[in-house]
Image (cartoon, rainbow, N blue to C red; front, side, top):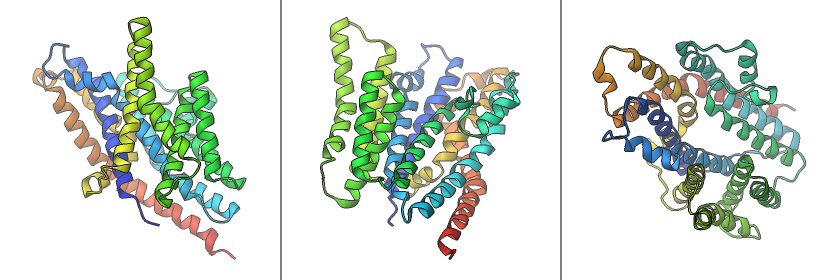
Length: 346
């Protein structure tokens, strides 16, 4: 199977959006709104760079995950679950103690053993606990998507009619109940439909959602915002962020997946380490923020915000490459070896 390197690149760019948002959001406390480089934060905050990255991540997951479920039903499901487990959990577990240090210990905050155990599952909310690191919330939605795909595969209905039905149904749930998680599930299954089109290079009846969902998100959401503004004369900033981030996040995926296909080595490299980059960038910048706020060196706090963003990006990339090589690569290889045993057994 050919690897879609430009899809790897989307992951990397999405991760950088998230890093930019989080670093600028924290280090802006050293600035005033009149500071010359306050724009570094304000532009990221206005359209919510973090959510733009997350939406692109979810579309990529939809493009990639369902296609990795294949073969005989029982064996195929076991292989998928083993590979996903060793792809996600080992490096995630490494991030937990580092997150406890950088977001709890340094700030004299306490964390209970029960909360730690709940977070080890990657689904702490199921046990009534909050994530140790705020960004872990996306992983729960990813796991739910994996569960949906696994169930469809086990039932023998992991096909594009199912993707169409679930994507449309989830979109309706979002419209009626305003449940944003349903929108993300809809986007993920849209990604699976888009993958079908890319592989087959032809439309089928699912063109309705293939074309309709991007129109609804990229064009429909802004039009809805304009309608609310024209009706009430104002628009809640929360809605502005929501509309802008989800429209731009979807548009980012569409442009980079279908038109501006980035396959150069730096972008692909960022995509390969994007999971570590997503998990570990707070582990890097929070200790620096803690130190900067306490040091007697005034010039540290006077550093330009763009300098903090760029330097934290570079350090996060370097650290993520280390965790990728030392944790992700060996655990993925081990998972592949364990999964291959199902194909070699009599």
